[in-house]
Image (tube, rainbow, N blue to C red; front, top):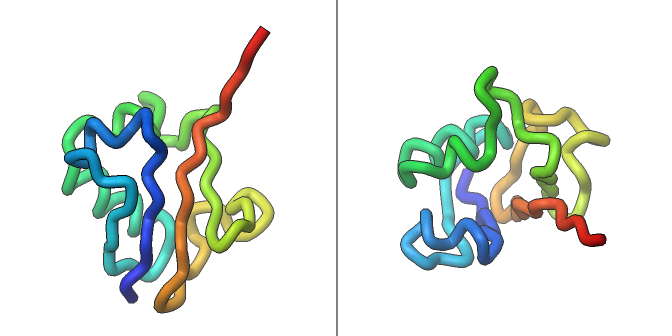
Length: 91
């Protein structure tokens, strides 16, 4: 299924300045794997050394946090949208 992935501005230097990328994937995890293989350097920004999503990276499918769905096993449907949202801290 073709899904859109919204790329935040801080990561767009890794996606050839694209703010949105389309991939064909059945799950969120599969979509991430495709993105990580397509755009070198993205994996290191999204995942820690053990391969888990970094704590400060939030993923949403159609505005729903994947942590409240099925995490990376969340199934995707045609025309779904994934948003990668890095947490921002201030002080």
